[in-house]
Amino acid sequence: MITDTWSPQINGVVNTWKNLIKISKKNDMDIKVIHPFLFFNISWPFYKEIKIPMVRYKTVVNMIKHMNPDYIHIATEGILGWHARNYCIKNNYSFSTSYHTKFPEFLSSLYWVPKALTYSVIRNFH
Image: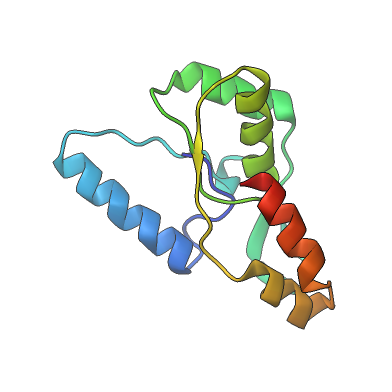
């Protein structure tokens, strides 16, 4: 799984996936997670709890190849999500995505980014 939000962040995305991983382990499934805290990261401006990983595409690709996953799920549309999505598309690798939040509303209220613009990007991602 690839996600741009993970512990120690506290939010619905993190809680949902941590619970799913617990349940999966009970069923002998192993879910490996690529997340921002595996890399050097910086805080999102004006929202220090959100971390932005400073990572190159090739680094994410190498991690995915090393993990050799049976499945790839991309949980978020951030830097890691886009790197993973691009890798999957370029290599004809099946993947799934999920949409968890009202990120367009968040960006609109905090930074005045038009919701329609953000929804367009998210629609393209999924």
